[in-house]
Structures are given as structure tokens and as C-alpha cells.
Length: 76
Figure 1 (cartoon, helix red, strand yellow):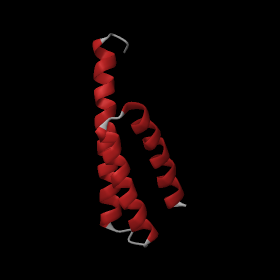
Figure 2: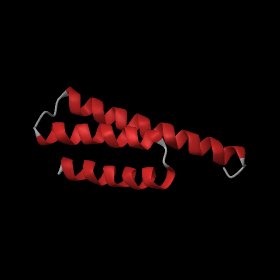
Figure 3: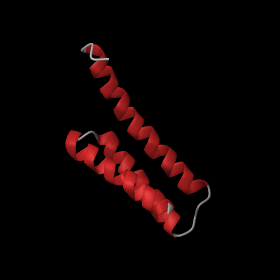
């Protein structure tokens, strides 16, 4: 079940990366790929959690940049 959730998130990140080309989304995808591999091998300890955390961090970095652009144009 966890692998399916991670794959679903990766799919959304793939869409975001394809649409924007932002390297942060690619980094998030790479980290999720590592987390999925670790999860599939039942290494559910710190390594998988760390990779998921890195993926979240990369994705939120991209979101922050988008927020700043919207804010600069007074759309927020």
C-alpha cells in the first residue's frame, strides 16, 4: 500500500516536472524512486524516511518559488 501511495505522488511530481522543467521536481522524483526501492526491499527504517523527507523538501522548494512569483504579481 505504501509503495502505491509513493508511486502516486511520484506520478504527480512527474507531471509537475514535465510541465515546469524545474530541477527541484526532478530531485524529488529521484528521492522518491530511492524511497520506493527501499520500501520494496522492506528497508522501512531511517533510509526510506530520509528519502521521503528529501523529496518533500525538494517539492516545497519549487512550491515556494511559485508562491513568490504569484505574490510578486499580487495574485495572492
